[in-house]
Image (tube, rainbow, N blue to C red; front, side):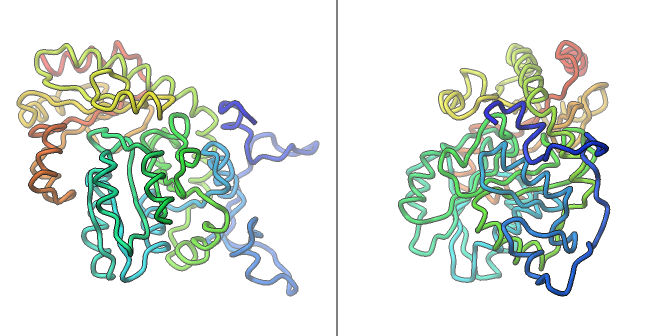
Length: 394
């Protein structure tokens, strides 16, 4: 299938027989019938694992894995209970004591805290670099580097990484490249085609789109994912529940249309904010004013629904906005049908999550100032959202 709208609905499905449901059935079973002559490994290590035990795999979850793989142009996918579950599984499956990880110095806070707090005690060394700077990434590579991990656009300041440029560095050094493409979604960017070995998503965000379930996925080559299934998924146990998979698979049907609406709304809201007297800076990849707008145009087919904005006196405004907005939810997370807004004070997130100092902290402040509002534009009418923000700011 060549059109992504068709792929989002049909990939991974088989044409039904008379009397079978057209809508995807939900398989709520923890175990499945087997036979003495079927080895247990068939449920763990086959390219198309036989349903055996739902912690290892489940037909409903399997459809979601195949659908996401088709959207991403990957050989296969492997689902987990959350985005953090998928990312932790990737790290534990690809890194060992004595290995070295190069990672974005600005990324999802949970990931930044994981690599700071949990990997070094396991003997894994970590270098945090500005992955938008290819020279800095190349300089960080060591003889024991096994993985380069970048998030693009980066949460919360929407800094981009040149995926093809990173792939040129890692492939030459025989290092794995993993891209967190949660904010972009496969509607915007398909990192496998640009040379990445792995793609991860928090399916909780745009893929689900309704804010009612958690999920994560790793996408890549089939054999690599079989190895991760056997190790990280089966033994750590962060398996996706079939009902969560059913909800997310159903949501994928409308992902292309939703992302178009998210982009439309975000562009309108960003234009309003850029002209407001209380706003000192607006960061949106679809704006020519974004420092990496040319890369965004080359790498993204959709600029997504995320905006980062510096508000004058942001700390004081955060309290007012949280009390006055009627349509925006003052809440964390993103990619929902409803719009969210949340304030990230630079000092707090730079110290607690990113552990930035010196030039790295100065570079973050260049984007975020003393603090930044992360705005996830939902599916409401943009004029209504603008009126809501205007009222809160007045």
